[in-house]
Length: 100
Image (cartoon, rainbow, N blue to C red; front, side):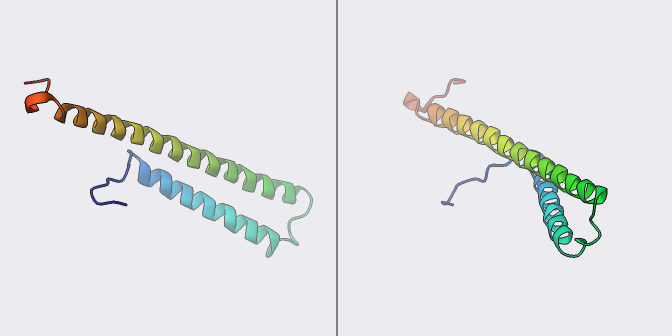
């Protein structure tokens, strides 16, 4: 990042990122445990149920990641508009703004 460059942020960012981190960790842990430790126990209906839950959590994780992406893009647009507005007002002749 260059000097003076602000990080784009939005309300609830920490919660969304923490939730995404927890979900991806659970999915990874379920994958490892399902293919190693619990492989012998996962037979028949238990196999289908276990992996269905794993895929459901994966789908929720992808949704949370897409939500994060949309929120970042929205905050970026808002920041760009604000910077453009500030630049436009500072470029007025005689240093006057609209409110002067």
